[in-house]
Image (tube, rainbow, N blue to C red):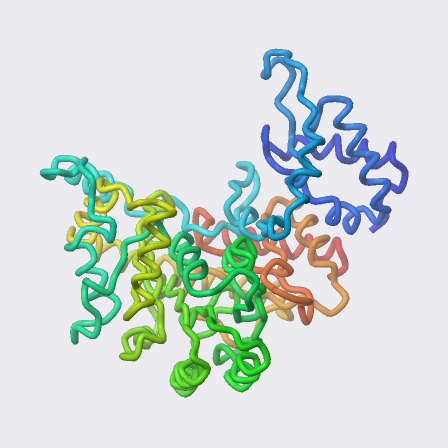
Length: 479
C-alpha cells in the first residue's frame, strides 16, 4: 500500500483516523502502525509525539496510546508526567505485559456504522434478556439473596453444574464443583493453581487469546501444540510433554476457538492417556457447549465425564449463551487439586456475588431457558449459513473444507504473503470488523489468518453484507 512516509504526513493520516475512536479508546500499537503505513518506528514515534503535543492522544508507557478527551471535557487540568512508570513497570522480573490485544479486539464495541464480525459475544437480539430480567427480579426476592454465599458457591447451583457437566449418571458431584466469576476467571484460577510461575504450559495452536493472556500474566511459558481438523495433534502432544515436562495442557475439545475443530473420539482417549502418563492435568475449556447449532449431530461428552482419575479440570460457563454480564461459571476437579483451586479462588475473589448465583438458578430453572437455547441454535445455524454462502460466492479460497456446526466463528486462511493486519484495517475502512489471526498463536503462525465471528451481527442478512464488505477490502488490499 502506498502510505505516507514523513512524520508530517503520518501525523495527518492519524489525525484523520481519530474520529473512528471513542474517548479513552486505545489506538493501534506502534508495531501495527509501522506495518500498516510502511514507515520506520522512529517516524511512528515522532508522529505520535505530534498528536500528544496537540492534546489529541494520550501516551501511557507500557499500556499504549489512547484517544484523549475532547477539549473542555477534562476541566483544563495540566496532564501529569507519567514517564516515571516506564521505569517502574520494567524494573522487576515477571511483570511483563501479558498481551491482551487479541482479547480487546473481540471485546471492543465497534462504531454504529461498522458491522461487527469480530465480537466475542452474541448480539443482544440473541440473548434471553426478558427471561434474565425476570430471573433477576425473582432472585432478589429469595430469602437471604443479599447475604454472604458459601465460598464454593450455592450448593443447589453446584449440584446443577455437576449434573450439567457429568451427565445424568452422576459421574460428578456438587462437592467437586466451584462456582466462579465467569470462564476467564476459572481459567485464571486453574492456571495459577496448577502451574508454577516460570514453568511451561501446553496450549493448542492456534488457541483462544484469553488463554495466552492468562498464562503470560501468571508468569507461565505457553508452548504451542498444533491443531488440525480432528483437534489437537496427539502425537505432537506426547512429544511436547516429554520435551518440556509440562504439568498442564489447556484445550477446547468442542468447537475449538478459533478453528472450530471437534476432538475426535480416538484422540479424546489419547489426550487423557498421554496426560495421565505425564503426570499432568488437562484443563478443559468447554465454552461452546451451549453454542451448538440446530443442524449439529449429537455432541461428545466432556472429557471430565470420562475421567475418574482427576486428570481433567473442567471449565463450564453460561456467559456466552446468557449474557456478557452474567459472569457465572463452574470449575470442577477431583482430589487435592480441588483444594488448591479453592484456595486460589478465595484469595482472588472470596466468592461470586450471591444475587448472580440466585439469578442463575432462576434462569436455568425457567422454561424460557430451554426455549432460548433452541432459538439460539437455530439463529446461529442461519448466521453460519449466511456467512458460508457469502464466502463461497465472494471469497471461496479462504474457507476450509470443514464448517463447524457449533460455536460462533469461522477460521479463514489468507493467501501466503498477505498482510492480515492490513486486510483487517482495510476491512474496517470498508465498514466491517474482523479479527487478525496473529494473536491466536503462541509462537510464529504458519500463515496469515482471519477469524470471522457471525454471532455478534444483528442478523443473517447483516452477516452476508459484512462478508461482501470484507471481499471489497480484500480486493483493495490485493489479498
